[in-house]
Length: 198
Length: 326
Image 1: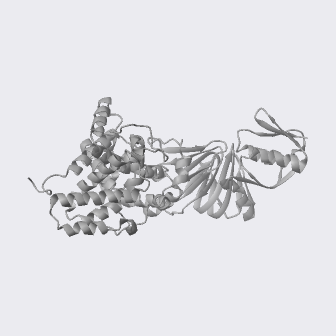
Image 2: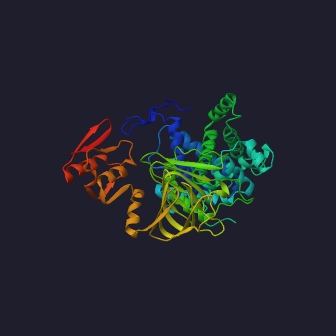
Image 3: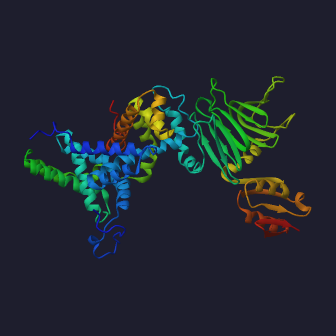
């Protein structure tokens, strides 16, 4: 998948497209640089795409394109890179589906994604981290949250959690899976501070 | 062709798989080599699999942060059914989270034990924040035990020195046992040092009571700000110290020792509490030289330099010790 692992493109490499990015570096970059932009990305997708149920697929396709492009060379400026991919994908989809009048495509071209959100400020993200995590945990269904805390904080095994909570192991597993799914959406996809969705 | 809304989303299916792998892998007892191989095959299948997994894994890993904060004295045995995190307490804990995480790298945590043990090595310094917001700051070479769950306000100072900032709660008294005595907080900041049979308690703010453990006779001694109580096996002496002196005694919290007309011998003894590589005073001069000022707890060179420059003493390195003499 990655042509030449372990050889990173140097800034002065005259043929950066020849070098590849190792999966390890790519993953670290993706988690560090791309995932924190997911809330903005989702907001953009919800504004630009009428079919809410397709947004998860769109996001996935965007991440695949991000992966493929970044595995050749990590982009310098992540936000414009990510949104260019998102915009192009939407344009492709619109042309392909022929659902939407063509002028919507034109609208998309003019969306100024860079100005609607400040770039990710590392220190602000760090400061916000615990608050966000707390909000996300609070939003989990109570039994889910309890299972997560027993697993992640108390480091109990699944049988131990089942015993403690008085439920079956398969129910514990389901609670944990639900929690992992919800936490990913709440920590990356949504923006808890932008009005609580009660 | 079905419409998109009737077809389960491809992305959602992949994410469901990713979550299943994530949760299964988090169970080391049942995770086999075959599982690992299957997982790697699944992961390598497509960038969609990889990015979906990275995403759920990264958010799952972030819950570690809660673990690090909550590990500090918050058992789950008392978890109410709707286990909402106490927000105010959490915020307090969050403030020190980074410090605590760093400091606690090696702290052991045994769920089965009634008490959790926290300790610092010689020269160590550690802050423990309980979920009620109370803070315990350990000085060098200190061992402390904290009850788990609802007993977390029951603390034992096994040895060394600790500074307590206790959030008062009339319904849950905060007690510290040490050297055969017990201090009960009545809303307080105090520092305690246990060495051998001796216990020293200095109260900075609020009220606390001090009593011998396991006895009913005698009134507990009520400590007021400025009081320094020294309890030995059978007696307690009480001394009043100016606030400034008390806060100087806490300079270790900032990594400093403050000497106020302290003899060189006493200063060296104090300094040695914080350092594995000791300062040895040879000869008889130790008592007559007085030090004033602050020094970093681990700056042995500075200590030697002061002895040389202020008192004209000789200081030399010998077997990982600094020997100061005429």
